[in-house]
Each structure stands twice: as structure tokens, then as C-alpha cells.
Length: 467
Image (tube, rainbow, N blue to C red; front, side, top):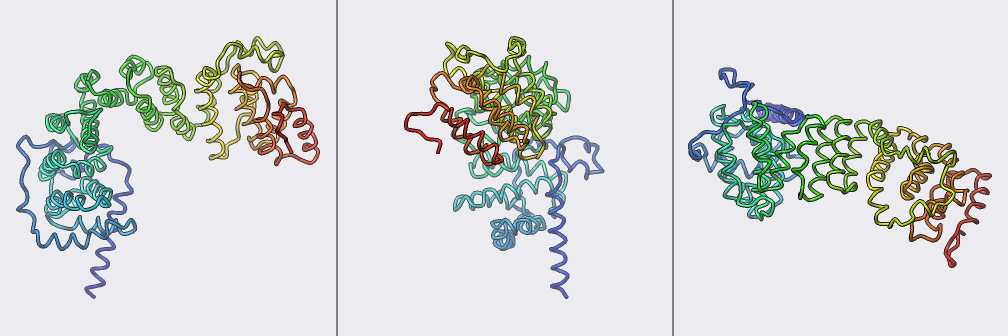
């Protein structure tokens, strides 16, 4: 009978923790909502002004060590990790024990790094579920956590993973946060502590803006650290219109392109699709490097493919459209790229390439049909041969018979085939490969005959064969 009651109790605890994990990331500290007796219920917790407190007297080492030996293997296995976390949340004095056990465990093996960070994150979320813990003990624990992370790279790594996207700090905590800052940020060898500090700083910056103290963040726009300047920029401009971003993008001067690409991905994830597209385009212009933003464009398209279509329409060169005078493509294709190096063509094509790729990939994943008219426009009239070739290939793989028909009609014309060549290309071998690999399997027997006629007219290397 006791075993049945115990089993039911554990099962209920597991279900409780499972549903806790399923909640969306919190934006404010839930401890305040539970502390109905405090007038701070709508604010974040602040850390105590005194030094880190020693709470080792809360811990019965012998009892918790024994319990930990049972919890540890549960945390290691993904399928039992929730059970291990549930057990830990039932142990009085476990937070203090946790601060002492991290170094011991990770000094032996790094396999517990993620499980421990997961456990710490849940402890921060469900503090009041731990026996003996309350509103007052939470800031004490944070003070000790900061101290341990500053002294131990093991704890810093665990704390960094746990603190990502947390919102627990108040403006009053600024001194405590600044004290965690390592000597160097951009070239720091203390990766764990640096990441932990940056997550803390982002949390603190948001607390400043939420409490009408944005000026406290603005001073960091001139910080020696590029990374801190980017974080300050993110927080200050989160949800702000493009005009405000345009005023501050000079902050990104000298920031590595990889970091700006990460910023673009953050923009795509957190901002509305149309706003995100406008901002990512601004980042492309700011960096003078239109490539490297494909993940961001894909994420924008996943939210709303029509935004990608609008961006593609912006890329259309209306002058080319007006000058075409009824011709589908230039009679003298060599004049289109005359004097332009291949490298420059690729550079100029970067933004269109990524927009077209993102549009194609989102169409494939969502099953939403592509707009053949816009692909037909790019395939016929875009001034860059790389863009034309990409749009032509997309027509052939659009999943629409009309697209395949258009692709065949275009490639039948020798002028069009020549217009797809780059300055250093002298043959149509890439076209032949594409026709055989992607177009041929979609054709009827009659169309196969038509394709064979096209292949026979392609200019190929002397030792090449389409058979």
C-alpha cells in the first residue's frame, strides 16, 4: 500500500514538473506573482546588497549526498531527466548543495553540464516548490550563484546555459551584474563566464528599458566591447520601427559579419515578418555584404512567405523592364556582363540569391505554390546572369507543369542560353546537367523528344556527351 501511495506521489510530481517545462519562456519573475503578501509583486527580484551569504548550515551533507547518488543517474538519461529534476525539487536544502556539487561533478566529466544547467533553470523557475525556500531566500541564492560562477568556469558554463533568455533582474542589481564582468569580453578565454555575464547583462538591460531607464543602456553603445554594443543595440531597438534602427546601425561598424548574421537571425525570430525583412535588408546594406543572411530570410518566410515575395518585387530592376521593349532577353547577351568580373556578379547577386533560395525552400517545406510570374520575370529580365539562371532552375523545379513548360521554352532559344553564361564560361555543360537531372524525369514522351533536340544544340566541351 505504501509503495502505491509513493508511486502515485512521484507520478504526480513528474506530471507537475512536465507541465512546468511546457510553459512559454517567462518574461517576468513568477516568484512575485506567488508572493501575495509583498508589494513587490509586479517587480523583478533584486539581489541583496551584502556579501554572498553562507547557507551551508541548511544542508545535511550525508542525507543529500545519498539522495544525489540516486538523482544523478536519472539526470544523465534524457528519458528519466524529468524524474531526476522532480526528485531534486523535493529535497530541502538542495539549492545550497547544488552550488557545491557542480564543480565536483564537472571536474570528473562534462557529461552533466547540460543536465545540471537544465536543473538550475527549473530551480529558478520553480523556486517556491523547493521545501524551505521562499521569496527572501531566492536573492540570497542568486548572490551565491554569481559568486560561484565568477570563481569557477564549471559553474559559469552551467549558469550561462541556465540563464539564457531569463528575466529575473531589477535595475537595482546593476552593481552585482557589473561585478561579474571578466577583464576581456571579445577576446576572453573565459568563455563560460563571458557568456554568463552577457546573458546577465541582456537581462539587466531589459529591466532598464522596462523601468523607463533606457539611458542606462545607451551608455553601453560606446562600450569597448563589440559584443556588448550589439546587445545594447538589440535591447534598445527591440520592437522599434526601422527609422530608429537606421539611426543606430553605425554601432555595427567593425563588428564581424558572423555576429551581424546572428543579429539578423535574432531579428527574424523576434520581430514581425515585414519589420524583420526591412531590418535584415538594412543590415545587408550596412555591411556591404548581401550574403550570409539565408537562415534569417528562411525564418521570415516561414512566418509569412508573402513578405519574401514583396522583397523579391523590390529587387526587380524596373529600368530593365522598360528597356526590354518587348524582347524577353537581350539580343546581345555578352553586352549584359561586359566589363563585369564574375566575383562582382556574385556579390551583386547575393541578396537576390538568398531571397530566391529562402522562397524556394519555404515553398517546398510548406507546400505553398510559388509565384511563377515573378520567377519568369527574374529568369527573363534580371540583369545578372546568375539570378536569371537560378530563377530558370526554380521554374523547372516549381512542381507546376506550367513552370516546366516555361523553362523549356526559354532554354530553346540560343540567345537565352548564352545569357546565362558567366564571363568565364564558354559552354552549356551546367545547363545540360540540370536538364537531364531535374527536367527530364518530369516530361512526357513527346516532351522527351523536344528535350533531346535541345540537348543536341547545346555547346558542350569537346570530350563531353549528353548520352
